[in-house]
Length: 342
Image (cartoon, rainbow, N blue to C red; front, side, top):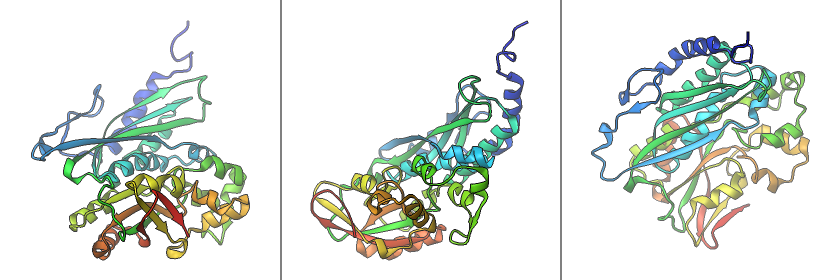
């Protein structure tokens, strides 16, 4: 007799993974969430935002990319969910939005309930760090499409801002200060290059390096920082962030110009903050040119904000109080839209 299980899809495992993940999902709830876990869609009340002058929805979607290959090799699945949330909510926050809710999508070759629950635990942790509710998700068991021990993870976030609070770079002017917040490591971009530079075996990843202060695997899998609370703290301190850039794929050269209006140029000083040891190691071991490093990786800075020089001290204080490490890394000058790293 043929059935779905003999075709490789275990519905019972699906039920079990939902049961195991429920406790993690509950921890992310916000008062606006309506209904329980397991409905066909996530309901979220907008009543708390109806007093905004011009409520504006913002959204972001992303995945973890080939960093997942590292999780497979290390058999460590409880932090990639943080990466997935971070990649989405940081984009929403950098446009001036408050992330409200998140949905995830996991596609796997075989549904192992404990592993799926571990992934979702990380997603829930990311949501807690961002103050967003995990209102739904999908686990798709796809035998023959993914190897049995592999999966893909992606998701999306929806946030809100009053239109007047949107961060769009239009008010950036010469003399504005650039403040960078430290990253935790490589975050979730550039891993196709990372995997070419370092030997990707369990043994190589477990090797301890004094330079890193941990094993290579631990340094590389460190979850992406979530800057939502720090950006909210800056706003609550009364500082207007004029422009903001999440340093993701394409590094400084691609992302910094995205925060600038025409006629404004960003100047970033390399020596203004410590480049993390993992990047020195990547550059050395891979014989990668410095410009390519800044064009691929975050180089130790995960988020860059532009503020009026009079507000720089107050902004940095708010970031520190929110648990981040800020540095003044450069300034804005008049010129062709772009970035110079010197």
